[in-house]
Every structure is written in C-alpha cells, then in structure tokens.
Length: 447
Image 1 (cartoon, rainbow, N blue to C red):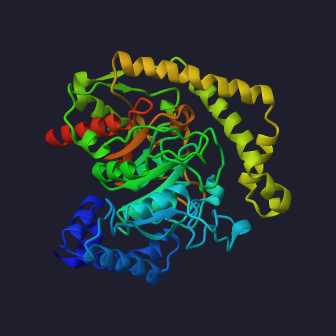
Image 2 (cartoon, rainbow, N blue to C red):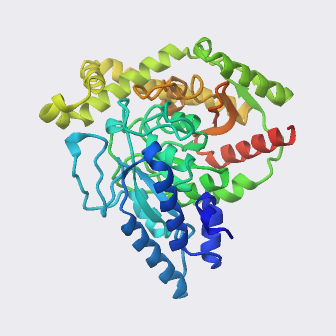
C-alpha cells in the first residue's frame, strides 16, 4: 500500500488494515498529519491539534495491538472532535473568547466511548461561537472563498479534506446536515437521545444532537454502532438493545424503497440549479418517489423551533450573558434577547406540538414511505465567510428528533457539492442508512 495516500482510506479500511497489520496506527496518523500540514493552511479546520500527542496515542495503540490483547472496532483510527465536546487531555473552548483556555477534567460520554473503541483523538475541530451562527475561521475545502457551513464547520471540512476519516459534530437546527452538504461528505443527525450528550456544551436539551461525519455510509454506520449508548447523565438517553448498524445498512431492503419528496413552502427560495438537480433526481427515481405536502405549514414549524431553541439557549447561556455579554457576537446577543422574551405559554405550546408532528410522520412512514427526500440546504455553499448559510430545511427534522442524513449525490452549477437530505422514522437509523445505500447504488447503476 502507498503510505503517502493512507490519509484517504475510510475508517472501516483503516481499522481493518491496523488490525491485520497491513499498516500501523502510527503510519496512518502520520499520513493524516502530513495532510493537515499540506491543506489546513487554507482550510483552517482545527481549533487545537497537538501532533505529538496524536502520535503518542497512535504508538500506544500499536503497542496494545502487538501485545495480543483484544482491540476495539476503531482501534488506532484518528477522529476529530468538535470543540464543544469535552476532552480531558486538550482544551474545549466552545468557539468563544469567554471560554478561552478552558480545559475540562473529564471526557464527554462520546469521547469516552471512542477511547474505549480504541480511537485516536486527533484534535479539536473549529465550531462557530457556542455552536450558533457566528462563523469561525474554517473555509470550504472545495473553494476557500465559500463557507463550509456551520456550526460543525471544522468537522465537516476536516473529513472532506481527508485530514481524518471521521469526526464528531452537533446539531441544534442544521449544524451537521448543512455543513455535510456544503463540504460533500455524509453527515448523520441520529434519533434524538440515541447518542448521549453528557459533556457536550448544552444549547437546548430539546434540540441538541451529536452529529457524525464520514466519507462513506459504512463509516457512518461503524461510528454510530460505537456511540449509540445509554448514559443516565443525559436525561433523554434510554436503554436500548444494541443494534448492528453496519449489518443493517449493508442489507438488501425487502422491497425497493419508496421516497416522499418534500419541497415545503421553502421551495421558491431554493437556488435554480438545485431545483434542476432535484428534478433530475426525482426523474431518475421514477415510480419510487412521490411528491408529498406536509400538513403543518413550514412557517409554523420554524416559529415553534425558534421559541423552544431561543428560550433554552437564553437559559443555558445565562452565565455568559450576565458576566460577558459584551464579548458575545451581536447575532448571539440578539438571539439571547429574543429567547429571554419568549412567553412560557408559547414555549410550552411549541413543546406540545412535537408529539403531534411525530405522530403524523410515523403514519407517513408506516403507511407508505421508507424515507423523506428533501434538500439539505437552499443550494451549494454561499460565497463569503460572513454567514454559514440558512438551516431552515433542517429545522422540522431536528425539532421532531427523527434521524436525518445528508448524502453527497449532486453538484451545483458552480461545481460545489450539493447534498440530498434523507429523513427516516424515529429509532430507525439503521433502516435510513440502508435506504441511503440503496439510493446511492441505484443512481450509480443508472450512470
């Protein structure tokens, strides 16, 4: 194997190669670090990266494997961690000067699970300010004049630029799906509560999810398999039987999947080239897709999402507001001010609509459809670094806590990636990945 191209291997290939002695974790991490030196000057995906610490972890992984002891499913594989997820051996600054120099004493749940699986924690990837809207320094790896999206900008960009095969992000509105679409990688927002969030900076208990980034569906399934767990410190985590997500995703569907194409009232704002690309996709799917109009208007859903997110963000950033509001961005100050004005009645009414929305979605999935097909964003990554793009196409699925996956299937007229968002039923994350595999294979066979 050409070790100079080792940074391009998938996580599944990397774990297998290390386990079978084809190459070492040290060689893989060295290749990834060389890739960082080559491209990160332009991309700027990392908030913290200590090369020697990453290499020390790789050496320890190799020593453990050579000792003959059992190794985990991600043994020796480097993973990037969004800088709102606590790591005991490196800073977690949450994208804000207010938390500069903050070094947690304990790992977040997901970091502990990664270490137990043998992963090398490569470093911390750039987040927007407190995982909200104000951009960090990261640029789109396909064209540095364009945004990578947010708030998980560094994680999406690091995976897209082959600096690591896997990375963790988060999503409170569209912070995984949108950057995955803009950067041309797979991004999964799993079912709410499936992956524990203890040790991740809390914006909104109702809306926060851990997000996963990879360059293959199989890698997403592998990562999900290791991170889906119960943790009583996350109030929305529940004990569940272990699911073999890789096997489920790789399985043949009993019937060819049926898709519900959802445009919503936002469709008129979608870029012309994106509308054309979706028209071609729908034509390719033929009788396997039907256009469906949701009963609940999008404007109402967005209002409920803003009420819940605004109020909870205002509470969770209360200390920062009281002690350092002058160091918050104008956009975040405005968001907190809005949240502080949300009435209890409006907040509780919005919370009460979530079960109703989920019931209507469950009926859709049980009666006819395997997945909803809808845009991940309004188009390709916008030019300029002042904005991370509009997350409105992700709001409903985040509010309902259903699994959503950005699939890098298309390109815009400018040559930049354009993701397709697939949405599945709650707790059917494996079936959603299986449906995505079918869609990718179906389109590949047609071309």
